[in-house]
Image (tube, rainbow, N blue to C red; front, side):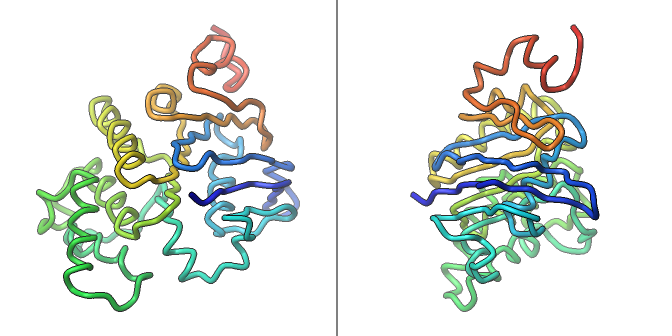
Length: 238
């Protein structure tokens, strides 16, 4: 099982440093949630893990290799990124959208292509909408269609930026169950950025808390359920 290590990672936008020397090892074959208040550096950290931004210092190591030294195509076969916002693709059907996840794999048999796409739709719970256009679907179903696209890549590491957006409480519970299913069926390593501490606790094996671009706490979900944790991470006085 491949390891993912974040070593001495700092990132900045212009002159402003938003991550400060982050050292974290992502547990393989587990679900890790990254939590924190707005501006704490969560999405920046996730994008650095996906090689979408270049750190000012430090590195993200995938199986002991700096991800900046891995070709884009190879990295896309190993790692999938689910963004918080998606381009307007309302003219596409769900099947057409999810099919795009197979592009990094190049030429493959029609049978393998169809099997991967159909399995991804099944896992994301959108197979019944396969031939409907995204413009005809609810925002929550569209979110799951984009998740299916990421799953169609058949990655070893799945990075999710706020996957619970647009989902009602019942759908969030379904998302938590889906993530557990993915971990068990696909042996996936999953990293999820979320504002929703309840979703993190219910769906994760490991949680990392950021504040002002620094890791202030990491551990098991049970360690994040107390009032003191909310006050420490979110600055809330209860």
